[in-house]
Image 1 (cartoon, rainbow, N blue to C red):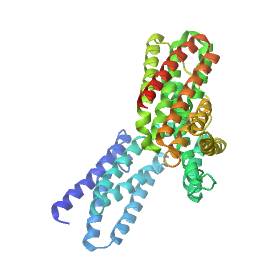
Image 2 (tube, one colour):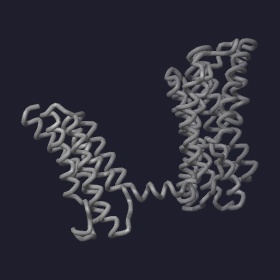
Image 3 (cartoon, helix red, strand yellow):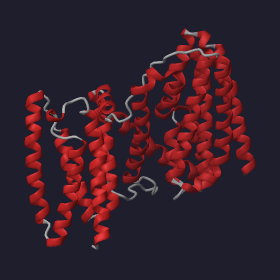
Image 4 (cartoon, helix red, strand yellow):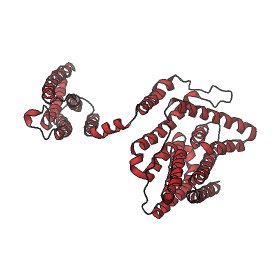
Length: 419
């Protein structure tokens, strides 16, 4: 490495230390210099020392230099931080870990990938700066939700690799690996919405709750908002807007998941879902304007989608829908697939959408698979309109049903025009 390149990389090492030191120094800005072991200057020098160590290692062509200097630095840094901790009765190890990371990132900037070193420094600084939000987030989670996150990791990295990646049924549609992968996908998307509802739902009001709830379960969200409308009829317009937003979120979720699994579905789904969803969006906007600032704070009760029982149920439903679709297509042709799409869509649109997305690349034409998904979305939208009217009363039901019917009709018209 020539001199100019080395100086440039050492400057990056120093910048890495300054970046991390800025966050560390800001946190201890109110303390006297002799009361803190590490601040802006210390971390800047740590990054530079790491870079110089990397340069020496290259000069002597020995990685042992890095190891020895790193051990010596860590011992000295830990000792000074321990003295500070003893004086302040604050035994956090974050600054020690941050110092070690700064040294190694400074070294990496000289001897390794410069982009990786910079990215690592930014990530480190962000994690340090987000201490309070991260602590609040962890405190807001229950042990059940933490366990569910671990369940998702186990489902992905332990169970998935041992499943056979081939069909095991006479109809050549049941692939355990693919079915479990689809189960993980939809559970992860639903869990993201579930966590959003748990953390933000009660504070952000009806509209944000409807969007987050629609990501997790638009049916549960509709039921919750309908019950709230029954108790607070004066807020019917606002709650109707929330129901339509939950339905719109469901449509967006279906479009994203289905086309991600099978991009060939996009041309067939694009306009019907865009136009139908657009009608729901217009309806939600008009009802929001009509609500005149009414405010409610719904408390959604959504089942954790990463509990083992719901995950197994989802996998079983996907398997059943795939097998039934194949059998019905054999005996009744395309009408069989469309029939099961209509029936299953009343209760759950995710199962049919991901089943059709997977089968569209093998045993079902993409056009037919898209039609099945659109029928399921339409039936699910109408079923939720009926639910809203039944539980929420006439005002909520009439508003939701009107825009739902127009949305479904517009989507059907777009689909017919395409075909």
